[in-house]
Length: 100
Image 1 (cartoon, rainbow, N blue to C red):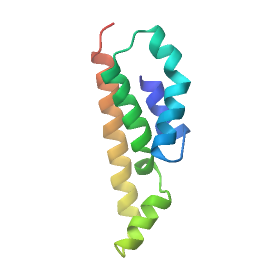
Image 2 (image 1 turned 135 degrees about the vertical axis):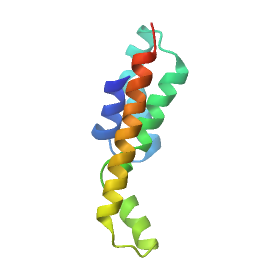
Image 3 (image 1 turned 45 degrees about the vertical axis):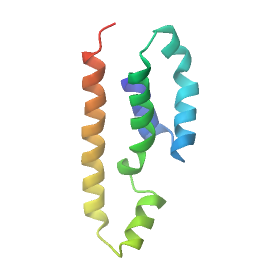
């Protein structure tokens, strides 16, 4: 659960749906073999595909800043890194609380 989330956040970039598809196809055999609950797998897919844009600046972040006429990239980066840390920590906590 933790590894697949980190691969999604830091290893796969692109559109969120494409990221989910890549993560899902990459880790699906392990998920099926471990009989992993789908509600936790959905959490992994959601975090792994949506948090990428907070972890490091992409065109989406810069485009939104342009629309808002903001030039404060430093604050956006600080906010994005905090969101990434807390969200990944949430996944880690859920992973350790899950009992096989």
